[in-house]
Image (cartoon, rainbow, N blue to C red):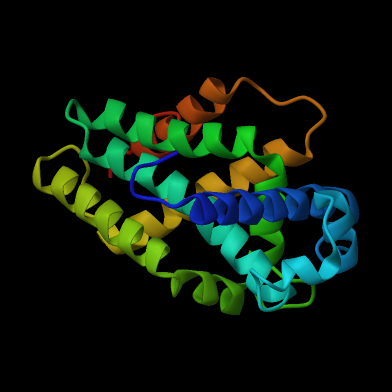
Length: 210
């Protein structure tokens, strides 16, 4: 037990994490719309009312489940951004971190995707909603700075770093979504190499002479 936390605080953190883990398992089986608070409580082995000691409602539970997990991902991504070395390898490590994280947390990615693109919602509005999350904003600004520096160093041609960051983020998510729906996916490293090659080398078979 941490010297800075009381026994009650440790128990509360454990209970919250147990409820969030149960929510992810139920969502994996039933989907976002089919995951009731009652089923989540039964999955966690607690009374339904206990959930409301820690969460205001289902939306609060889902939002905090996503935010808590993505905090861990963003910590790893920021470490990758802060690493030293050649740009191509740093970019590869950044994308590998994201792919590996969601490969290991399929249930979380299902929830993340369902909240990003709710059934019947406008995808652009959903993306804008996600972009308002402080974690996302902080990471995006650091990613933009990372790309801006690469442009200044001559590792990337003159491009709008903000649009490039958006293209990268949405492209990586699209590949992860594809991996989630496949019966058998390539090794994560193969998809990562493919993404890096696409971003840095393009798709033309021969370099244009224009």
